[in-house]
Amino acid sequence: MDDIRRIADELLLGVRPASRGQTRVYPSSIYSAGDTRILQIWRSGERLLLAAGRGPLFEELPGTKIDGFKLAPLEGMTRRVLNRHFPQTLPAAAGRSKSGIGLGDRLGLATPGHIRAVRDRDIFPVLAQQSMRELNLTGRTYSDVLNSACFGSMREGYMLGFGADGDHLKSGEDISAALEEGFSMITLDCSEHLDPEMESMGMSELKRRYAKLPQSVRRDYEMAYAGKEFLVEGAEISFDKMELARCILLYSGVIDFAERVYHERIASSGRDIDFELSIDETTAPTSPEAHYLVAAELARRGVRLTSLAPRFYGEFQKGVEYRGDTERFGREFAVHAAVADKFGYRLSVHSGSDKFSVLPAVGELTNGRFHLKTAGTSWLEAVRLIAGKYPSLYRRVYARALESFNEARRFYRVSAEVSSLRRPDSLSDEELAAGIDDESTRQVLHISYGFILHGEPGGRPDTLGREFLAAVEGEEELYSDMLGRHIGKHLELLGK
Ligand SMILES: [Zn+2]
Image (cartoon, rainbow, N blue to C red; front, side, top):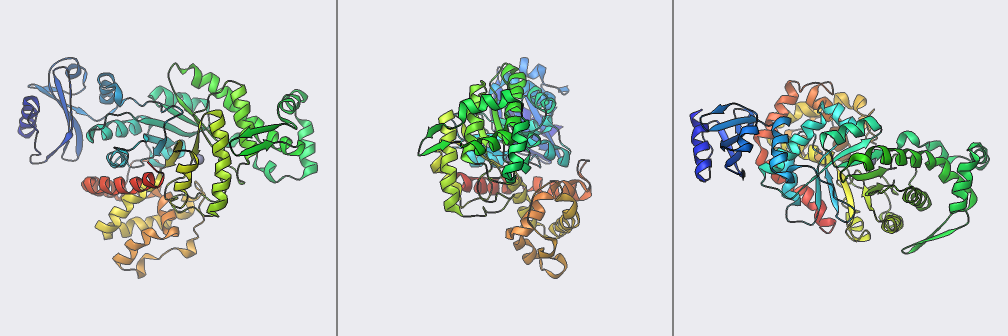
């Protein structure tokens, strides 16, 4: 405790505290409120908040008082006290005009690196972004995710605000749970209300299904859209009868669902929430007409979207480059951007990490007003760190990824084939580490995080998982620098 006492004394005196013995200090994490000063420390494997002084902040923090200072665990209770005294640490909505980047963090260690990437750039960071799938596979909770974002950004000395995205949520209950925890953005996943069969359905079957819809539904849509032309910047959108029927069959369920969720859960929440609609889980790209219909209809029903994610032309697979004709992507993306512009929200690009060949078009065609989501790439940078620094650990990590690939791919759409994967036994450490840039290897590592960290997804980290986490944590400076550069490269290409 003597170490801590000395650090607490320095903190109170306003001297920049130095690390001592087993205790590492983070000088950028010093803040004051009234007569209390706080600082984050790392001590024998544990992260703590050291508070010194007196006053309301000091009293409210959990932990035991020891002559003039207190050690609080970096947990939800501590975060909520900090949120009250430093409102900038509460997740906030971005609104419709700022550009945003979603930065998923599966380890709870990436936030400082994410801050290095966004600091000094014109971009709003959504530091917490997790889907139910990711929560289940990592065994984390929404509270854990917010803890990492809040403490991680404070540790880096960042106080300019950030968002928290309950990503790809499908039910009203999950949305309410995320909002209650303090999330500031909801991405509504409408895949359960989309019937992908409609995309390729033949005319006669389409007609038959359409005739079965209630007459009032058909009449409302037909009056508003059939035979009409709608202008968006640089394009004209019109619906012939069959195209309209197909759009209605595909999207009327989505529209009704989004309308209900918005009025029941979002608009009534009493605070600003970014509401994103995701219709990207289809097999065919979203047509400009379908995008227009969804946008216009939701606007007519009083739903205020902050962003919308269509399915774009080409393949956006996790963790690897864009696949497809980039010129055609640009042409179609421009029309989607014009529709989004007309209705005032931002276009959202999911699985945006490592799509370096299309990022400049995303930045330019939206006039720099977009939302881009990345998630697994921060995890892959941690794997890259391990591959470079701890080859024997990486060998075991890679072996487990291979073993679990068939099970892991049930949760994700990837194209890697087991037969194309590198076999660890015949490769040197250097060759194995270099594989992290091979697309199939990246995909395998990308989707198997739950298995690598926990053996079985969802439980507590097992031996390999703990070793992995401790190794990344031990190299936190390096990890933050790698992430700062890697995410920074995305932002550079986006023109930010
Ligand atoms: Zn998505």
